[in-house]
Image (tube, rainbow, N blue to C red; front, side):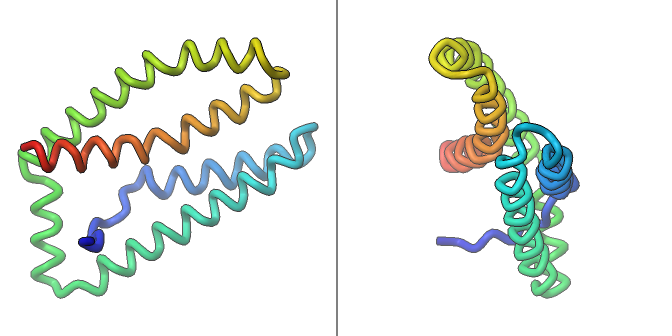
Length: 137
């Protein structure tokens, strides 16, 4: 399997910070058990971004320039746009019914975990669709 040489985007770093800050904010609330999980997820994502950053920085200068060009070329921009659109449509179709089912079957605090699950699954789904479109086109 090909090792990813992509440089982490600013939103990757923002996601790490969001999880850690949300975990810290939940410490004094009734959901304080979830706060340690959120902080652990944020730290795990941060470590993943650091590993990706280190992998990118270990490339020779020419390979870094080539990677930068690959990210900016028209084909990859089209794939990212199409990926975002398809993932947005899938989320819109699935989020409503899933939320209604979870609210009907569980206590209201479980909705928080549903939202966090969607936030975690969205980038994974987007990556999978991007990979699929990359093979298709």
